[in-house]
Image 1: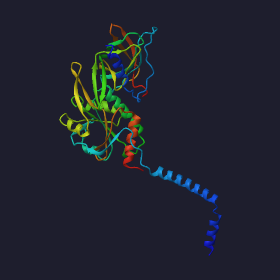
Image 2 (image 1 turned 120 degrees about the vertical axis):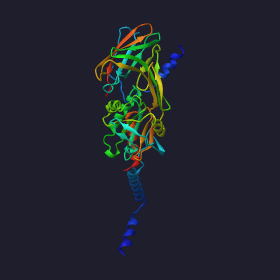
Image 3 (image 1 turned 90 degrees about the horizontal axis):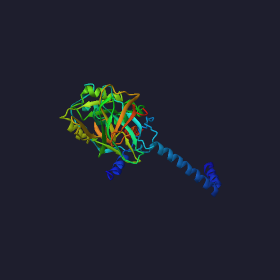
Image 4 (image 1 turned 180 degrees about the vertical axis):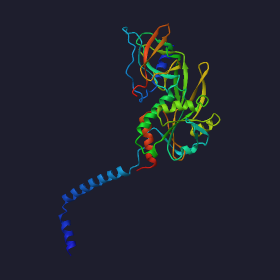
Length: 221
Length: 156
């Protein structure tokens, strides 16, 4: 019989003032706990300028070689993230500026686990002048881990179309030409699909932030 | 021409500076005359060894009462230099030759990444990644503006 008697005692001590204090304490506790749970379980931050595709597009299977002369196939894109840029080595302004930004972004991502680090690829839109040797001199200059890819003329249109990129040749000076090309960066997921596009202008911080967020969205912890 | 100038200036102002490439220590052309054109923040983009071309950037201020018209660029290091403008439309970058660049009185024109730039071609020797590179702007009327551009990316 002791139990109910003690219960009555407690009830008896709950004056209106005490009830108000208890309610406030309860509310404060609920708010703190709620914030704590929200902090742990909220959705990860969304990318700021990258557009994540609702339906990722598979990268077309076309033959290519990297700047070391090694065959590059779709399998090289599987199992890791890749950031793809279309450019050419005779490009004095936009391409080196973009590669410089990408090198900065890559350094900002250095502390990501190795399996999450995106590989950075420049696919040449000028295979006529960009030999693998030329790409080998050019692309790793910006970052030793960057890879240049050469895809022959006859396969390049299919590849760029698959990404949603375009390019075209325009005369420059008396005996030269330049290449108009898409400056957008493309993020390819572990299933070799174009998962997000990053329209320019680009900054190292912006690119790194977006990549980090997209990679975290894939596997929120 | 008078109508085109403000348009041109507005176009140039529309080119956003690349925050990744902060302004370098000024390599300046200064003159006692207050009306003398001023060249600031000139730099040459570093390129991989063996490259024979690169891009140059600078800002050109015209404090004088008359438009300043740049008709050419010269350097002992390069066989050919052209002025080019990069235009990015719908995510597509197009680079086009620019015969002349005009700076309206009181205005500043910026040559900067992703916009107007000097295209430096036919390097006579290895393009240095440090130090300075001598350049001259040729003006309409025959005047030359000699200046030194910093070789290498500002801030890194």
